[in-house]
Length: 538
Figure 1 (cartoon, rainbow, N blue to C red):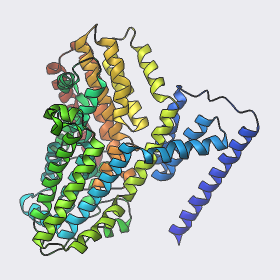
Figure 2 (figure 1 turned 90 degrees about the vertical axis):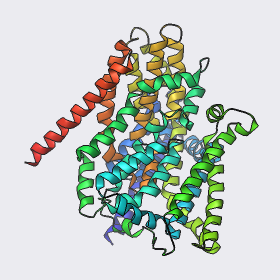
Figure 3 (figure 1 turned 45 degrees about the vertical axis):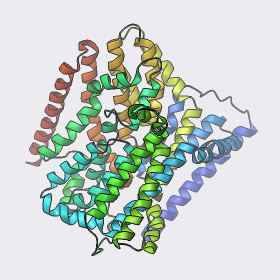
Figure 4 (figure 1 turned 135 degrees about the horizontal axis):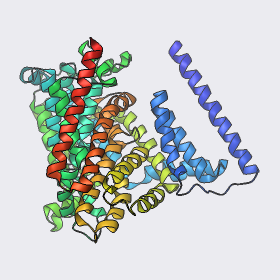
């Protein structure tokens, strides 16, 4: 009764809020209609900031995102009721759900959910858990295995999040690793690994934004300067080896050791785990479908890049459409998996078909959050956030050449955090960097492009409205707000060290000097944090 009462109260408050906003917009429409003067101003970044702050305060993702969308619609329409509603739905929800790229990602999500359901019902996940219990003896081993698998699956961040989550969840659960820690390890080996992998959808995206230059060569040369990505990978390993956590993550890990993997008090979350005790299931029932999925997704991506029409492998990856390629690859992988299970007589055809709706149901929260996040981004785009940031960076590029890598890193962090998109940040900042440096200082251009990529990944990594962050929560089956709040201190730590490293790199211009300094600083900071924790515990 108490829970239902709280839900009713929240609903009433939300309805009163919306009613008040509606009446306010009607008054604005009846009175003087203000000109939409917020285009390409700092106000264009207010809607996502509102959504993020509300999500962190209230722990309610859906309502917070909707309020951010509402603010964006109000700003765009000049606080007119009809214009606000039309913009939110016609140019927002309907537009993003009609976009071919977004639909492809949703199809990929649903099929991945169905495949996870298939592997669970076939007993593959349970069998892998039993095998891992014999081979992986410790919590540290479970975490290192998750990191290694995340690094190996570098093709695409969406694919990484959901695949690593489905494979490693039984293992980390067995060793009482919290779902929040699993989500962090998944998220930290998704975008940060993809952005330094030459054969990935992210490399293809960056290459496409470097116009007038050899994009792939620049991407390769920028890898040693991608400090945030490299230091994030180092951060995970150091934390596991040193056997400590800090911030909210420490509480989650402490509770996990006592049997509470969620630290949320929601009993139903544990009960939602599917029954995987199929006596006929074996490890191959998990491993074979995963290998098939990886193979088919690679084929799907190079197919969209024209590989079978004569393009080279690298060129095909550079020109690939991740949305279509992953949707095609996952579909054929699912069909082959169903045939595989039927031939092995692990599952009947009827059982396989029953996994489709259950897989879709499991992905509904991620799909909802993605839809809201995409709509919020469309509100931000319509307010000219890209134009505002581009102008701000151009003005800062005047007499701050050696400081520009650090400045670009900060701008990339903020923009990606506010908009929830790395690729959008690449599209805004990389052309500016090329225009500023291509004729004056090519080496500083490489460092600045790396800083742009690093900043975009950093902001994307910790943003509650980032699709990769949402996918990591879905892959770990972790509460989304828990995932965001527990990994935020880790992201800030690495970001601070990366910023100092970029300050040095702007003057030294050598990764062989600055990267070891960054690693030493990160290790030193973590040692200090661990020592303070030990002192506080005494």
